[in-house]
Image 1 (cartoon, rainbow, N blue to C red):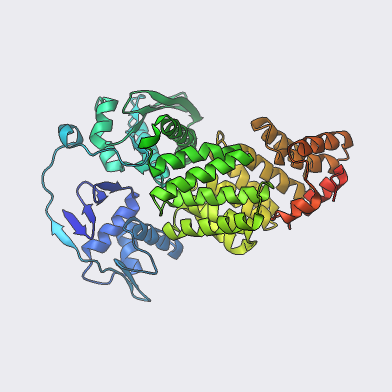
Image 2 (cartoon, helix red, strand yellow; image 1 turned 45 degrees about the vertical axis):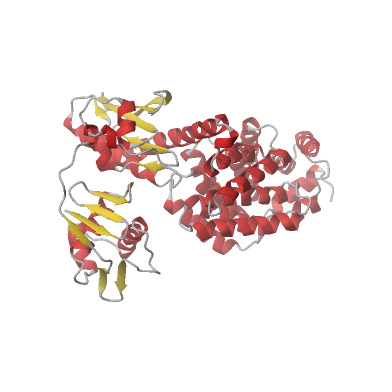
Length: 516
């Protein structure tokens, strides 16, 4: 049976939710919850009804049920405030109130049967994760491999810039020999992730490879070996390892393709991709170029939230790094652009992360910013940007221990991110405020090795060395800092913002000899 409401098609037999031509990726529990609400749309269903139907009567907290209902609403473009499709009746339950049309399922072809009707590539990066091959011959490993692939699909689906094929479409290829280019054509995706699982001597070895389905080029390949202990914990660990490897590879590949395109063919997304590496440079010229390219993207697509958020971050860095000719202008632009991004999509984790950092450093209202950062990491626990942003917001709010934990999580989920140096510096500053000066030196040196021209690393080193009474090293770090910014002083540092809870950092800079 297929149910249609608004622009959605809800296919019970194939367990797929479509929005127009796009498959909306949702977890099995969210699918079951939506199915129960639609099938029982003529009545109000209670919490107990939902728990019995979806969780088979297991004890489920109100918070867990609310989380799943919010996920259902998000998948179908509804909200708890709007309640356009799912209405909450206080102390009664819930009811699906959208207009639903029923349509019997028409027998169709498998994905491999109709190449001429294959969908076009979407206007953003697209990927399908195929079922991993069980190489061990052990049926138990089949369940493990399938569960792991489902986790990877779910984790990738949390990156809103990425179009991910739903599990049910990907798993139609299970047990079949496939041609990657053909699969990419049939599913309408640019990238294919495939792999295998082998169990031997109490260990599980997972091999994976990411392939450009258009060219056939291998973008990434690796093997992950772990002890087979807690299966679910192992699935989580492998999911983080795979996603943290391939997500930045996808970004790098997309940036490289945008850089090769002819200027007359550039789209708003191409301008955004070209702006990203310029913003990574963290130089005056790099930030200026990133702002210019992001605004070109906004000229072509005025509601491009990602471009607005990126431009806002660059204006903020102009202020913090002392590059701004008119700091008040850059402050206003940073805040304006972050609010524009939020108006486009206030449930996008990257947008929330950017807005939280901008508001924390440009406005200083850290309580609401922590809430935004918490929402960002809840929406995408595998996002380096969300965890790094939470670290910076906690650091600005005077919560250094929380900041350190967030930066550690950011580094774990993406150990090769081009902005890793920034997280190491943030961690170093928070460690200084915790009086863990030796650890701060280690973190700042890691940032220095990642990017030797990133002057905040020398700021952190000068302060930490001074606190440890390592005067010569403190003076050397301060000299390097002043090479990058000869006008850097204590008062200038404070005026740039966000330093109200960095008292020990500033005290160390004074000890190192930084002028007032």
